[in-house]
Amino acid sequence: MTERANVVRLRSAVAESGDDVTGNSRSRWEKPDVGAIKMRTVGLRAFYGETEVLKGIDLPVVDRQVTAVIGPSGCGKSTFVRSLNRMHEVVPGARIAGQVLLDEQDIYARGVDPVRVRRRVGMLFQKPNPFPTLSIRDNVLAGVLLNGLDVSDPEGLVEKALRQAALWDEVKDVLDRSGTSLSGGQQQRLCMARALALEPEVLLMDEPCSALDPIATARVEELIHELRQSYAIVVVTHNMQQAARVANLTAFFYMGELVEYDRTDVVFTRPKERRTEDYITGRFG
Amino acid sequence: MSTRFAVRRLVDRAVCGACLLATVLALLPLVSVLAFVVVRGAGGLSLTFLSSLPKPVGETGGGMAHAIVGSLQIVGLACLIGIPAGVLAGIHLAEYGATRFGRFVRFSADVLSGVPSIAVGLFVYALVVARAQRFSAYAGALALAILMLPTITRSTEELLRLVPESYREAALGLGVPPWRATLRVMLRTALPGVATGVMLAVARAMGESAPLLFTSFNNRGWAQSPNEPTASLPVNIYTYATSPYADWHQQAWAAALVLVGLVLCLSVTARLLVRKRAR
Image (cartoon, rainbow over all chains, first blue to last red; front, top):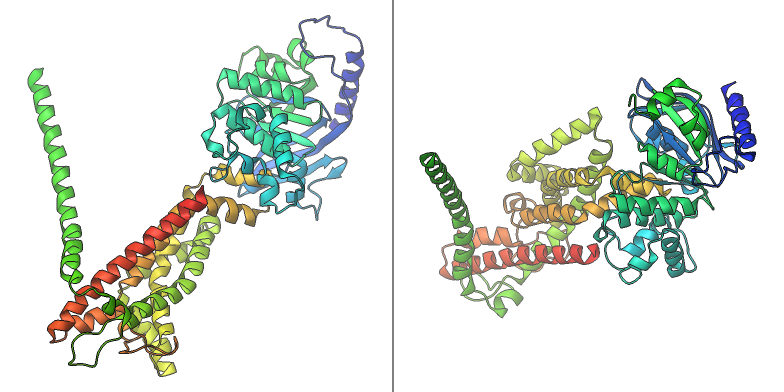
């Protein structure tokens, strides 16, 4: 039922985007052109042992759009993105119920290899985590090297991925240096290049800027903006300005439930739910 | 006010002094043992000593080539058994060690590291030597491998635990299978530390004489195969040092010097290799 409600709501978001009902000219993104659904969750529930962290989430991830997931600490937003590429189950005692459909195929179906899912759905973590024993070049190639895959043109792949991550100009002369010799913001973009080198279809980012300074944050946000043209992106953030800056669509989570999902400008200016309004106006969380 | 500062400064100086004194005291035996071995051993060290077999009892001269090779052979064989088993057990403990079985293994390893080496030698004697009816390098290697196991296992486990989980997550997030993430990311990152742990175990095994006394025993000449009694430096040091001949005493010192040098060489090489690969 709720799944259907979401689809309806999404349609209404599409319909609304047609004419500018808000007259909100300050919104800096083009009108959300809500496109094809790349992933969607159906009644997704997640557990740590006996604790239920996600209580039945139905949320689409639209292709070539940035979806922000916001909410107070402990609302399940990290768990949510981690369940989208089967990283949730890596933690002992963690388990999932419900479905996560990637191109309408359930990634939790029997016989689906989590390893394959993770190659299609890339992930960027909260803290930059380049491999300390590898050079910048090998960090970019890590996904390929560690998987033992063949690449015809490794140098070209490195350059392409680093360019995509807007890091090429800064590191092209020091590709042999250790990945950890870079600054925090550069490391995060290196991790981005590492994920992009595997040519994923969806990019998940779990608070990608929370360990970065404002300038590095701005660069990563710019990058997210550019990457949107080729990927479906989900960004978890506890920074509402950031959600407003980078995302076209915003989902508000509270206590393991999806409270509201709509175009970002709608969520921030005319939320339908009282709890959303209380959160974005800073009354709690 | 100023007297309080004066007292603090006095206490500070006293504690610093005490630390320094303790360091010197700790360094004293280390340096003096090394110096003693170098001073007493250098005289007996020569190309002949390194390259020839012992002369018949009663004649002076000859060397310990067979014992140097024998020691390396026994320790090498012990490494073949002990390093893979120890490192893999350490990986198991670090990755899946939260179970009852894991706690049991950890406890056993800790107990095993406290077992006197001569008891391990006795065990191998009963298990292998007594059954095969012969002393052999294999038996000596087995005894040394058992002695190496707990050190390698526990140090591998501890060092793997020091590697941040975020590296594993990064690898898994790239679609790397878990076993590869463990070997190529976690173990790779912990490698310098693991190698140090292994070197400590090898160095300890290299200097053990008790477990070799009745496993690989001794030999006055070359062992034709590892299935024969094999000479080793520690056992030869023991026999030569307790002999009545002055020439043999001199050779025992030289053998001790060679042993110390070998351990030093091994650990330096291991460190260099690891550092080179880490780059």
